[in-house]
Length: 448
Image 1 (cartoon, rainbow, N blue to C red):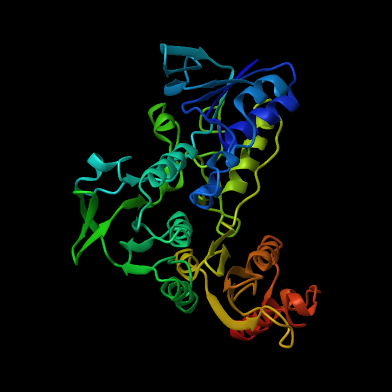
Image 2 (tube, helix red, strand yellow; image 1 turned 45 degrees about the vertical axis):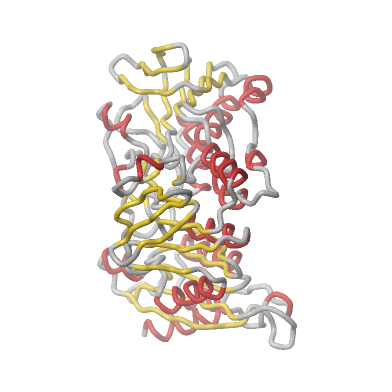
């Protein structure tokens, strides 16, 4: 049996490795359009400083996959067409066009950069204005900064990558202006928690322009002019961090059904609408654990897990992918910002009758030095009293406590059951009454 996998990053190489474990005798072929496989894309913003090495993000080389796992990895092979009726894929490499047949196909094409319609951006793309999606993007930016260290950086987009990169540019000594077209950053955060993130940006000298759309960009001498409706910003480097979209064009052209946000629709076993084709990772959808609806969360754990499961299920195994909550965390200077489950707006859109609670607790016992304040926000459903979502912002503890909230939502726990949980306590790690327990108590009252 020949298994062809399109894409060789998180989901693709997880699928290939698991397929090899499951069927040692199968022919497994990975087609990757770039020259890199198996790297930690989430670490890209943290490898921008000059004293770091972008290639540290590489996990396993293509050669090691070939030698140690008997997986044929073909680099520089871009797939341009899928023909389900012939069970063939076609594309292009350095030597010309190629066509390959398959018995089973796994699409792991990931996500692509969402390029905003900014006048003049095309002429500066990769030459002053850069995306940060692949390891090669990171190398390009580092090379540009090594040649001309930027004193002024404009970051377009205030999502995870934009905020993480902003922190690293500031720590390199650059002045940073963050431009966001939406009226608020992180719209899933409650207003009071969002304000803490904005205050953190201001405390570190980041200029934040919200509700501001970049209209044009052009080079003026050695600088770059970034024009908005309100003003013109001068920069030495522009990072375009306006989000990503599922790379599903190949699947759509092949007639495969699509799901949320235009991602490839898959069932619980990662099978697409065509029985011999599976999809995993950031190109594919998932089912939300609360609403049961198709959602698209381009997050690392889902990609790796789905890849492994697809690598089993192509051989007829029936190992379902669990539903997701979109649990996420990022660091922004001295803050940990986390979420899981539904926001207030998402719960309203799902037609749920909800109540919320918000508290500010301590990350350590009052008499223990250090620490700070942890903001906790919970939302629950009135009818069932179950927890539906949680957000936290604080200088520490949030990144780990959110996992407790995620586990509680997956288990269908009520506010009262969460309040009754036996959680760990020691003065360096929090007060005897965890902020999550206090918030659950407040949510219980709000649900009455």
